[in-house]
Structures are given as structure tokens and as C-alpha cells.
Image (cartoon, rainbow, N blue to C red; front, side, top):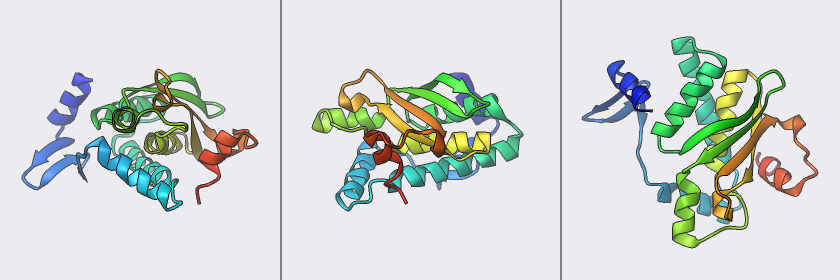
Length: 190
């Protein structure tokens, strides 16, 4: 990871200026995980719980697509880059547990995610998955990489007492929408 960060610095793709921090010529903000949790709680309270998933999916799609066009990187190599950016951005360490690039089916494990870890510290364990923002990041990134609209479902969540968070990613039509936990995560969004 240090090599990746050093490469970004030497290529001036990550820079700190008087006006703020920039990653790939785009202004970024460094915020505590607690602020994202409070935003998510407000959205849930107002019946808009899937806004964060959709916003982070669009943001990740845009960012990965721009990087793909800028540096002419494709497929697995682009996925590794997206993972590394996610790590240095503070979203935890992810890895593919399974990857089927032909049928667009993926399983991703996320360790050290700041959202569930902060929720556990602040409020204790939850009954439902909470990593909607990373779910959006993963879905948007893989959508940009594959050229297919990929959705993500969190199947295991550290905030629910699991060791790590785990996600299944694939096109919407490949999910069993009869399962309530899948329907809740995918069909309640606009």
C-alpha cells in the first residue's frame, strides 16, 4: 500500500495544497467516520436510507470511469487500483473472495471498515447491515470496470457481530429478490 501511495505522490495524483487535498485532480475531504454515520442515521430516520448507497455508487462509477479513461487501465488491474484508492481513502481493506469476470459475479470481503467499527464503539451491535456507503463504492466501481450495471448486497456485517463485512456483487437480475434482506437493500432505492 505504501508503494501505491508513494506512486500517487510522485506522479502528483495526490497533493496537498493551501486550498485543500486533491486526488486525481479532484478535491477531496477527510472526515471522521462518525459524520457519515450521523448522515446515514438522519437518512434512515426520514425514510431515505438508500440515498447514501446511490450517491456513493454514482461517485465511485464516475471516479473509476475517469481514471480508466485517463490512464487506459482495464479489468482486474483497474479493480486493484480502485481497491488501493479505497484503502488510502480510509474505507478499510477489501479483497475479492470470488471473481467471475465473464458472468459479472463477485464476492468481496472488507476488513477494518470504519462505519461498522465506529457504530460498534458508539452504539453497540446492530440487527442489520450498515455499510451502505462501501456497498455503493464497490457497486459503482465494478459497474465502471465491467460496463454492466452492478448492484451490491451486504451479506455479512461486522456491526452485526461478524468478523468482517462481506458483499455479493452482480447485475440486479441475478439476485434472488424473494429474499427479504436482498429486497431491502436493492429495491427500496429509487
